[in-house]
Amino acid sequence: MGRYRRRIWKDIAFRRVPIPKIKKGANRLILEGKKINNITGVGFHRRVPDWRTHQPTEVEEIYLVGNFSLEKIGEGTYGLTSFKVPDPGDLVGSGFPFYSGWMKVQTAFRKPAKSRRLFLELDGSFAAAKVVVNGKSADSLLWPPQRLEITSLVKAGNNSIEIKLATTLVNLLGPNRTYGIKKIVYVGPHAFVARELFQKEYTFFDFGISGLRVLAVD
Image (cartoon, rainbow, N blue to C red):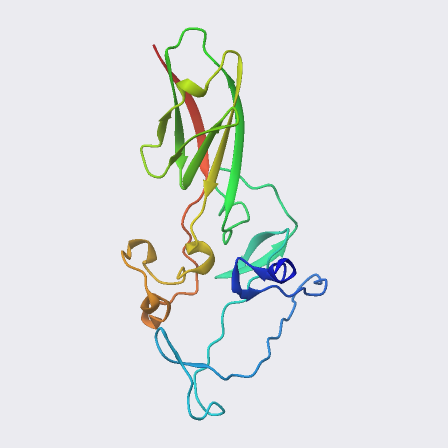
């Protein structure tokens, strides 16, 4: 099972296939296979009597996973570039528009001499945040106002704070080429095949944290 896990990525349906070293400029990736199971409607997967002539077949997205950043080269088009340390305040705009996972932000502060209660407040956070103070879990902040009391976890002198920000899957899996996606309340299979709403440009949801502050309350 351990060896099999190394050949998949996050989901058993996502097989990991090593690719040769890519070259500078345009590269072509060809996917070949035999279609035996086809879609007969939105959300339906059934065998069909004549698979040789049936249209359409179903092809999933192909994802490149590696240690690289992205740069925009055209409308709805991105190219690979060398890895760059992301801006914690804007992960999307600093080369990671399709990233899905965790981002860790660390900082330190000294406890004020005269303070009875201390609060941590996140500034401009566009993500769910897990807070760790001096190696101990504080709490998770899921929506505004992202403010948390940390008095019991703070010690005299220097203190460390670790913020783990979690993204959603929308920037990676979509449907982020759907016009007005940020205003759509319910997303289901229909949102991925609404051709009348399709646009070439991607719509990304913000992700990051612009700052944090520790507030002392006497």
